[in-house]
Image: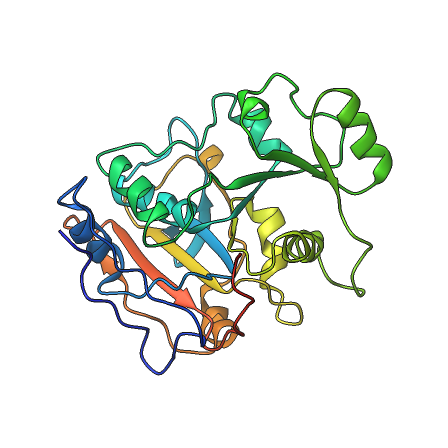
Amino acid sequence: MSLPPTAPPPDSALPEGEATAEASAEASPGFAAAIEDLYGAVAFPLHAGVLHVTALAAHDDTHSTLKITPGAPRSERDALALQLARARADIIVITGKILRDEPALDYEFWGPHAAALSHWRSTAMERRDAPEIWVLSGGPGLPPKHPLWQRPRTRAVVPSNTAAHALALAGIDALELPAAPPAGASVLSRVVSLAETRLPGASISLEVGPRTSGAAYLAEHPLVDELLLTRYRGPTPAAEELAPSPFELATLPAYFGHEAPEERWDEANIWGFSRWRRATTSSPPRRP
């Protein structure tokens, strides 16, 4: 079975030289239907720029970030949204806190569409290598025995050569961030700059907490090219399962340059999914 016919969002066009993602899904006959359940008939350009996946819980006319905790609400569709971003990424950015909070974290595909995601990544997305995992950290405090360090292409990203050297002595591959950007720009700006230098045309998926990702939504320093947004409106989660939202929903149309896209809800009308894309994106160099 093939993915459904794809088309770019209304009133926008794919950057010149990019292709839509249209690939067979023989490994899982329901894969194409599952994607359409999330976002409708969509286009997936080979170059996504900076991707961000997040889930917000609605309560009392406000929204909070839904944490990934044992007691938090779960959705198979939300898990697929996260894995679609991972399948498209050359680099996935996380934080040292995530490593500490999730001692068993790995980046293998899971669930009913695992085989189809792997096939889709290597064919439609033309990515035959696993993504690089960049762990953003100040240096000290990284768990040295976390299993991710045994995975090829996992690196710490730290603010100084001194921190990088100390981690290297502990057997952890580390990259030093470039010099600070203009005043007011965030550490994520430096991460994106480093990624674009090391791998021109890379698709970068942000899997950082709301405190870190919020800086990516500053109007004067916009970083996110595509937001895969999940909204949950079921029973209110416990306070420890929530964190502040990295943005106000009302600011997204101005940030991305278009009105809100269609939001598709599950049968229970509890989980909703939408895909925000920047109206214009420059065409990057092609990957070798």
